[in-house]
Image 1: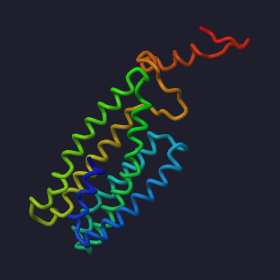
Image 2 (image 1 turned 90 degrees about the vertical axis):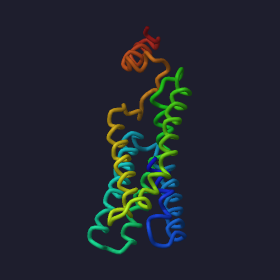
Image 3 (image 1 turned 30 degrees about the horizontal axis):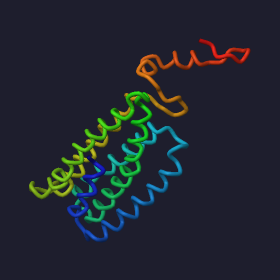
Image 4 (image 1 turned 180 degrees about the vertical axis):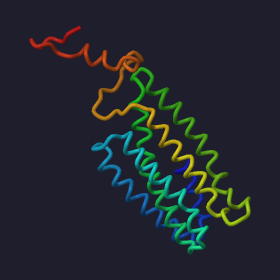
Length: 196
């Protein structure tokens, strides 16, 4: 929701919409290239956590320039940094989600999670327009605050999930219930035979 919503919100941030869009596109392309090089070197869980938390904090901090009556470009920069960080985290969701489900349920698991994500995608344009339907000083950054709060919530919830770096993917539901059992059952003995 936050990734799509911040993309929809570019026209509501203030400043020149075309410049905002161009800078956002360059930032998104840059972090996507960076993501391709670094994603397999780090833990997907913690890389997602760092990117999502950084992006959420940038979005949540957009209220400071409003309170201090700073120029609008301060809000735009914080919003674009938040958007770029969340764009870096977004592709990891599909890879990490697939690694959490066992082979026997991977398709339905990823499909179900993707369906739930589409609900956030459906809601995001309405949240991006919250500033247009409210008045007051904070109306301009209300969407960024909602998107930042949701992103920080997702980052905190990912802490409950196991890390998949360097681990064999689960093949059955029993592999998830007893992750150590699979590892000990397939461990070779001293004479080279696999122990049962």
